[in-house]
Amino acid sequence: MDNSFEKITSFQKMKPLFKSGMTIMYGGFGGIGTPPGLIDVILDSGAEDLHLIGNDTGFPDIGIGKVVCAERVKSIITSHIGSNPVAGQFMTSGKLAVEFSPQGILAERIRAGGVGIPAILSDIGTENSFVANQKPRCKLHDAEYLIETALSADISIVHAKQADPFGNLIYDKSARNTNPLVAMAGKMTIAEVEEIVPLGSLDPDEIVTPGVFVNYIVQSEGVNWQWVWE
Image (cartoon, rainbow, N blue to C red; front, side):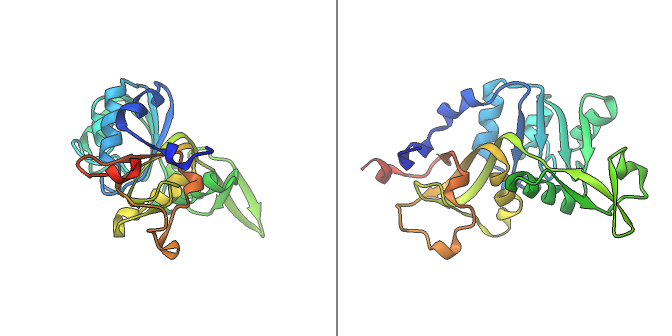
């Protein structure tokens, strides 16, 4: 974008971006760090048969769990679904296809997708048929590894504490969790932020996600950002 201020937009303008059948990656851990306003946009968009990638399925009424419980999701790659019993019911009934990936491996697969590495090698689960699940294998230095493919998405959604108009992001303590990795791995990344601050306000040493990874910034509801247009 020639003008960085074009990154700042509204929830309403984001709705047409979400399409049925697309892959959406999201930050968050148990709903913390998952962008609540963008979750509502996904629901309002009417998109269904979605493929999700994220740490967990939130709770039935918190985070990505709201999308899962609305039966909008066809499949998910995640580390666990234990905090959302509805997701478990959908999995056992065949409504939801679930690929489990150990949390650290999931994070590394997302990182690989963000930096352009096609796959990583892991010795976790080589002797466990549930984890291996017919994944390709290779040998390196007389040891056997699973080939874990990198993960990327059509759209990544993240939640941050602060952003400037360039899209540089700062996160709030543990709400940072997987958000920096997720922000890198989307063909398009939308950041919902608590506060948009003027250019130059962020300490460069505190910026976690550079604006080059962020396509759009959406202000969380209830915060005044009138200065942006002044």
